[in-house]
Image (cartoon, rainbow, N blue to C red; front, side):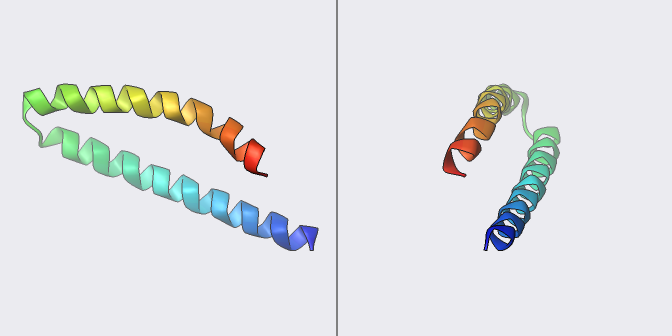
Length: 64
């Protein structure tokens, strides 16, 4: 039972990592094609996301 749960948890973590990579790719891609005023917004969102990502491991460990 524990092995199956660990496998599922690891699969979910892998999926989350893939999603994060995709989000980074699309964010960077969109940033290249945005007008300068929107770039500033994107940078602010990026800073907020970095803050959120620093908190994520704590949230994950609490759930598990």
